[in-house]
Image 1 (cartoon, one colour):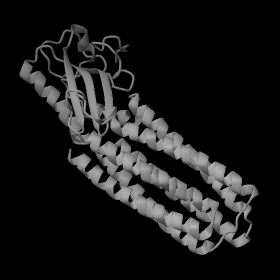
Image 2 (image 1 turned 120 degrees about the vertical axis):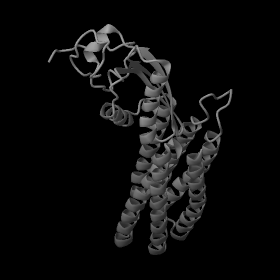
Image 3 (image 1 turned 90 degrees about the vertical axis):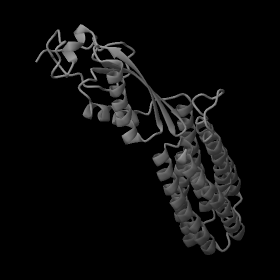
Image 4 (image 1 turned 180 degrees about the vertical axis):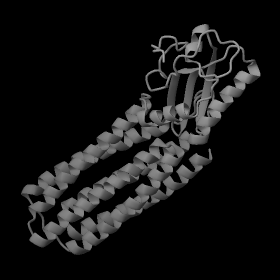
Length: 334
């Protein structure tokens, strides 16, 4: 919950900053009459709308779980990211239309030097806000504010390119450059919108986060307890900044209930130490079978029936297999 409070606090500042930068960009457009600057201003309308939508979604996602939403309200963040991506894409299409209209009917550009100065200020502000947003999002596992931060950084990068194009326009006086620059950055904006929509759909559809899962697999292999004979049926579902994890853990059959529970606690503590309390785990325990002796790394076991043959290294394939025991794995002696 404390993580969500930090995320919401940062997002409030980003939303207010977006309103201020929107005013500055429209002032720069009014001052210069540049359609390229208008593209930046139009995207800022999306920034403000997306920032407010993200803020609302974060407030909703911070609500505690209830009978209607037993896993909480974290999916609201993915919905907000999808809306943000859609708005960005629409803005890109509007920019294409404006740039096309002005390409054959170029307007007079005025006070471009002052306009570029104001646009440069907004670019630096977006860059700083984006870095803070992504850092906060990664720390608190928040998809909504991370998507917003990536958008702000892409906006800052596009502003840098915009300034380069405006500088060329300023030096040459060729009016058509204004529309060409707008076309280029309209395309960049559309690509950004598509990527955000794609990531939001991935979250809603519970698509696997392979980089995170690879880190998790490496952590489990490195810190494996000798009583963890096998781990399988692993499932990870993301809800906002929370992760729900299900898995089956094979333990020596002769452990009593308290000893088995202690091993489950070790597994949960290992993951929470690395990923924080945003992880919620449901662990089902299986008792080992005689054939399990062949892959059991426990050194001293008076119940062993078969000699140890080979340690099974966990990976993205066998951890996610839907099985009860690691008996299907091919074992080569020695």
